[in-house]
Length: 189
Image (cartoon, rainbow, N blue to C red):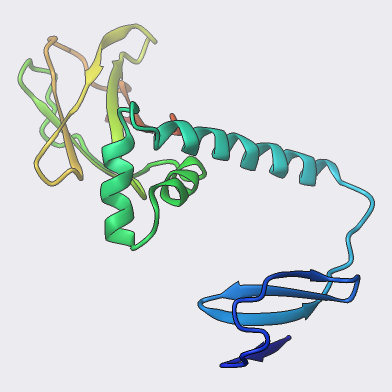
């Protein structure tokens, strides 16, 4: 691939010339290359990937619209990443939140006990839900965790009494604005 720098003839040129060359702009430079050969067959994986990108584009357009609740979030993230909100929203569509750590050491089964969850996302975590299930499968309680000022640590405060913790399951569900979900389970001993 030939790169031209400072050529008055090709400066700012973009597009196809015949069926031999393609001119395009990359980082303010004119790049000249051979026209790529296109395959006539499309695999199932390619169809799935195209559909997923189409969904990402539809999401990003809606998420960055003036009336969207997530517009401010993508505007702020774009400034930090030196990008544009639309691109940040497309990338966010493909990335679910990460649950880094669940601290149940302060949960003894008493109301007021706190479960601490460390969660991050490439843009922003929208919600973290905690579900506590007895060993026999019955629901003890569930509810939304609250984020602290860091935006990284979420805390859930228990409201129900749980007499027997052995074999109980704590289920953490984190979601972001495109509704990507990450789920983690922890069994109590």
